[in-house]
Image (cartoon, rainbow, N blue to C red; front, side, top):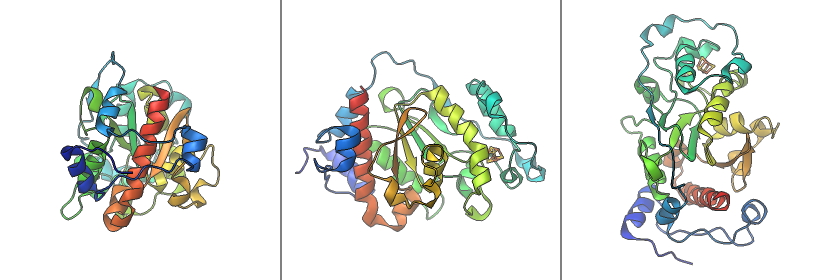
Amino acid sequence: MSLNLDPRQRAMLEAMGVTLWQPLAADEPAVKASVATKTAPENIAAYAANQRPAALNEHKFTAPKSNQATDTALAPSPAIDPSAVATLDWPALQTTVTRCQACGLCQGRKSTVFGTGDSQARWLVVGDAPSEADDAQGQPFTDAPGQLSGQLLDNMLKAVGLARNGTGEQSVFITHALKCRPPANRNPQPDEIAQCESYLRRQVALIQPHIILALGRVAAQSLLQATLPDVAALPLGKLRGQVHHYQGVPVVVSYPPTYLLRAPQDKAKAWADLCLALDVLRLRA
Ligand code: SF4
């Protein structure tokens, strides 16, 4: 089945590397079991816009760059107290993250990456960990020369009617599971993921998103380890195509933009994941 996409939408999908939309089959287990719907909306952008609550209390938030040039001399300090983090409001949470030394990742960072966007957005996008460019800018999914993963994410968001730093119905909050960059982009250690999860948990509690898009294995591990103990051993492909939950919020797992740049053949799967997330939102509306 083809869709009645307008030229702008087609351009967005082409920017993702997806030229034709293919809906999840009616007998797709994820759709039957978790979404209970048979097709995705045909006009994706209009659909996303129509699902927005009319009276939404907007609060635009962009994390300032951290002034952590001296953090290279930091040493880890005692572990995070999750019960204390759970009481923080948004500004206090940001300040706490900026000063955090709870794991060894504080030692090599230039900036913490708290996130950017609308702190009351319905969509929350969670990546794995800051890249070198993110670390330098203090912002998530920042492009570097020859590495346009941020641009690809922006195109993915546009395809569902969202925009980085967008307002109103286009708003989304974007962050990473880890707030500090692992040195040489190594995989985060389990204890580092566990430490930082308190901050992600509080962000979710304060934002109260309607859908979480987890882009990558570390994001999935951080969000799902409590309900899926063997999540770290599962390939990302096994986590896709179904609806998980974190603090009662539906979670859809998909590929990180950096992977999609290396494996463009999987962009169609990423598009299917976005359609699944839209279906979940429609059922929650
Ligand atoms: S990665 Fe998270 S827990 Fe570790 S120092 Fe940074 S903010 Fe703190």
